[in-house]
Length: 343
Image 1: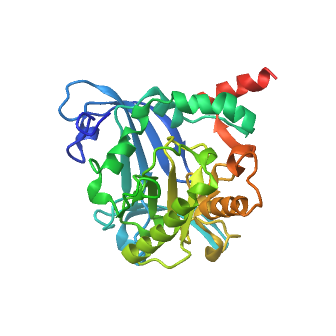
Image 2: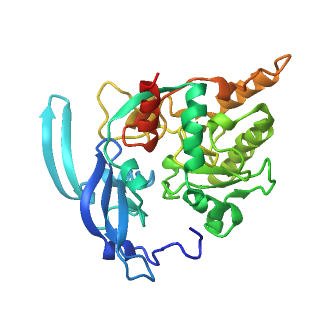
């Protein structure tokens, strides 16, 4: 769907003005995120279409944390538990108690059945994807995914969408990329910094496609993204975590960049000191064993392959069996399960 014909919302309230709730798809009490399914009417349209609204609590602005310890910040406080040195309270913000937003709202409209399944609560199973399974099942599946599913990526690469948000643009067709804030980040809470790298080349779909010949691209992503992020956001070297998903949400090669920062929580278990609690503690979305592959490790594996006296018959990521969790509603799950049952 091109930028000129895609449904849009011309104000912050438009989607909620027309949104009609149907059901809750999923809710995560750890990350304080809920996905709601309903219908909405996009701007310049009279038709009601499926829509997903994501509502999540925003991180605290470090400058306002001290103010939140004052009784004046709360309209109501209620004791839940008091035991020896521990206590738990419920609090309701007083009007205008926070300068920053209380929640962030994201939407997908029109939402497809694939989106609905993706964000629905579902059971996951461990999958061991051998190179043979990739060739016989996964690669054909990737090839069958409609090109329009990544049209929004091409809009960013072509400069027809989100151009004002681009932090770094490298136009080289082989080693170039675009660095931009991820839609999951509000671009204000520095502790929750989340960027994404979209490569210019359309020949790399996923981790399996990486070869030693892609090392210049990967090294440039690592070096230039860190340099620009440090210059723009004033963060220190070593604060960024670069990782690649397998399987990714969409099959155009991209890299996630998040800030590896200490989380300050008002509800931490007593046995976890503040200085030992990091973003991974709260089940930070997408940074899980099996799904996330650190860019530094990927570069290292490909460098080792490149240093061999003679090239192997299959490149490292083409030859590996990859183990990951996959939701049973994912369209790939049934295909992999059927292939395993035929053995």
